[in-house]
Amino acid sequence: MKGAGIDSSHARITADRVGKWFGEVIAVNNCTLSVGTGVVGLLGANGAGKSTLFKMLAGLIEPSHGTVRVFDRRLRQDVGWYRRVGFCPESDALPDWMTGREFLALMLRLMGFEKAEINRRVGYWLERFELEDAANRRLGGYSKGMRQKIKLAQAMAHDPDVIFLDEPLNGMDPVSRKQSIDLVRELGQQGRTVLVSSHILPEVESMTSEIILMDRGRVLAEGAVAEIRDKIPEHPTTVALVSAAPRALAGFLIGREHVVGVQVDQENRVVVSTDHAVAFYRALPGWLLGNGLVVDEIVTLDDSLEAVFQYLTER
Image 1 (cartoon, one colour):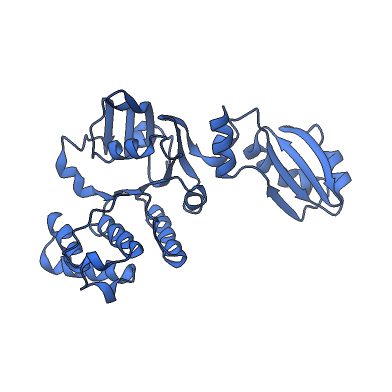
Image 2 (cartoon, rainbow, N blue to C red):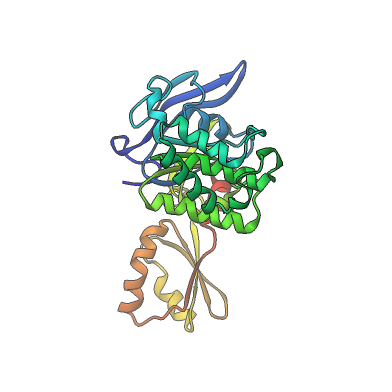
């Protein structure tokens, strides 16, 4: 099983009724979740509590109450398990007096690798992030985007099974963003667990459809975007079907299971409202083939991550 919201017996990361407060400020309030393999986006507006939850999941800070486990271990007690975890922080506190090569080598040495393997891995990740020309320059002279890439490299260089990426694309140019997104997706396809924290919805949507949504310190929803979307009954999903025979198509769809509204809004387009988009999409090919109907294009108008987040926070 993959993604967020899975059965805890298959989870690599779990949180059970976790909360965190700083004085009288409640940053995270009674959150329970589970994360399996693949890429999962941890999303929320600034101040939603995602950074605090993220740090608790990664073992960087202790919860005020509740428990967090990675591989069924409490990292702050079983510190040896940190070798299976990679972390790219949002904050930038690199040792500016070290070169990029020295920094990656130090991180790998702390993980217990021998010199030959350290050199091999350092070379690979410098090349992977196109930092070879800057390898012997001090980190203090790196641009924001280069510093971000060296942070990503150190999070992945020791080949961890679980990787935490906190706002990983900050400061990157468009090409570097695309390369980093592709790398994150590749890691998820390899069976690793990658938890990505971000407030930029389109970036996460380009990496994964598995999400955890936070608002005001609470987890609003977790799982696949399409499944979460179907659980908001007050906002039926809207689907546009482009067809050369829109009136015939509209007449057929009226009254079908999971269809709650049909209208022809343009010369060749039928707009359908469905209370269960996943089931509607499963049934649609059979309906069309069995009745000689042709649809040239299907566009879901409001199942984006942005729409789901808006609907949930409105509630």
